[in-house]
Amino acid sequence: MPGLGVSLGITAGWLTVIVLIPLATLALRPWELGFAGVVGALLEPRVLAAFRISFGGAIIAALVSIPIGILFAWVITRYRFPGRRAMDALLDLPFALPTAVAGLALTALFAPNGWLGAPIEQLTGWKVAYTPAGIVVALIYVALPFVVRTVEPVLRDLSLDAEEAAATLGATRLQTIRRVVMPTLLPATITGFALGFARAVGEYGSVIFIAGNMPMVSEIAPLLIVVKLEQFDYAAAAAIGLAMLLLSFMILLLLNMWQRRLRRGHE
Image 1 (cartoon, rainbow, N blue to C red):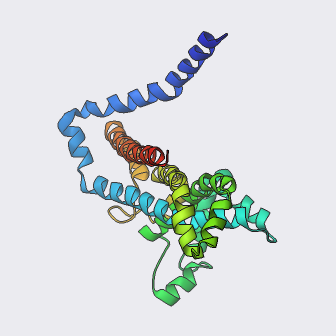
Image 2: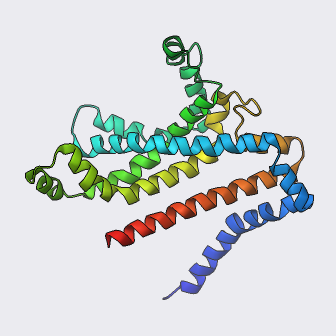
Image 3: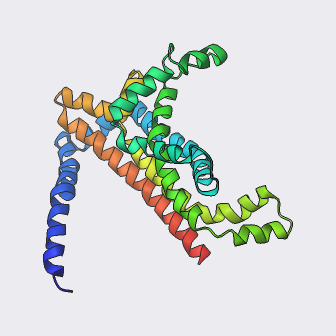
């Protein structure tokens, strides 16, 4: 192919500069502490608690985003109603809005004296802001658009013939959705979950304002990395970052393998 060598060289060069070199630095810097030092840094109770909050919150947020995201995608693609375009545009707001602004807005809404936080606390006694629940709310905010935008094209391309055939054979609407629509949406749903999880697990700006940032309670791993950097403990910060990278990669790899198996099964 004409120009393949030049284009491939430019691509490899940019990939090396913006991806490979930073990753190599991240992989090498923690070992200044030695193996025992890295293990000790990662097994600190504060670090383990931050990992549980970040990864647990990201998984919960991605799981919650699946039914909500499918519902939004279904409504947008299958129905016509006033305000549909506005709803469609609002779903892209997390992509464009600075995360710090989103964090301030969510904190104002779910604070104990906020528009949503006050009635929720009065009715249920449940505090959202400055608790792990606030972290999950912020992560759902950033993860939901990925599920919607991943499922939406599949729903648009999904022919109504199969649904109509199921209806003529006596299937209820719920049976049609469960046995006809959802198996088709499953690979896209897994992709949306993976994208939402990957976005949520490293989220910082929209979380730190609503989280409360209490060590062992509501402190996320990205914030702990910033704390380590401010303490000039660069090796420990790199160790936490490397652990997050490896854990995220393993989860995404398993999801990718599951998705490929599903596609082979459909073929």
